[in-house]
Amino acid sequence: CEGDQAAFADAGKSVVFRREHRIWLRELASGKEQQISPEAWTHCSFPNASPDGKLVAVASRLLAGYNIYLVPRDGGEARELVKGVGTCDPRWAPSGTQLSYQTETNIYTIKPNGKDKYQVTFGGGVQHYAGFSPDEKKLVYCQGPGPNGPWQIYSVSLVVDEDAVVLTKEGSNLYPDLGRVAVTPAAAKKE
Image (tube, rainbow, N blue to C red):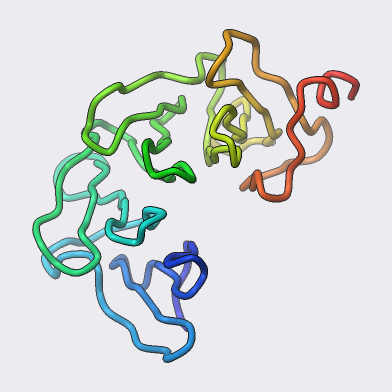
């Protein structure tokens, strides 16, 4: 289908994606589509469905700057989760108990009820595109010296206080996926 910024939903039976700055859900077997973002919303991006499929996290520029909202898949009122300049790219943890998101420079986590906001990255430059490990003990993300990179992939623990570990050192690397990246402190430190 036409669109971009797709992410799987419903255990891989559907995808959420952006088309013409609105968020859609498409059932893969039937091809049936429904618009998820409210009609009045413009400039939506980075949709990500909760593991149970009931909510879609969306960045939308309704007012000044982007904010993150949780939009019920089957209708109902959207709820603002994070407000702030440059907040975007929400990603659910596998358990659905927290999300990660980025600001213009750093990565944060937050619970779906809006509580326990936690700043994960503090390094210089820009950090983007975070994703949780399957056990939710780590985040993997991209870091670059400025908004145009070059990007390297890093991993950081969410359970122990330790410095982030660089996983790539050459080229420019974007959009890490912990389903495809092995993240172990011993292996990462040997590089």
